Amino acid sequence: MNDKSKVKEPMGVVGSCGNRLGRADRVEGSSIKHTRDSTGDGRHHDIPADWVERVDQHVHRNQDCGGAK
Image: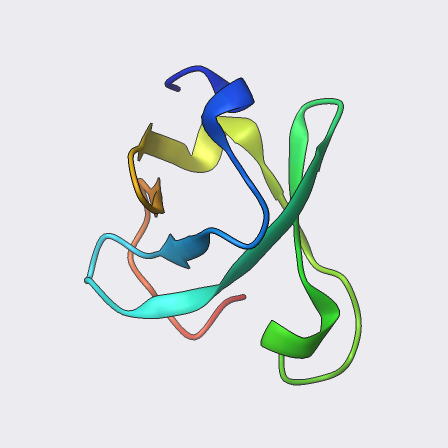
């Protein structure tokens, strides 16, 4: 993964399919938390940092969208 220090709030999180999957809230340890209001169920969802392919103006996941958030 690219340097997780590049992840900034509220950066968009994008799947490898190109769909927006949420917004990054913060980095906690080796996980990135999505903002509660971007997950659809009002709860934080964590993604492991090793699911991230790269970070530019968005956080790009290295997985397809598959409906997971």
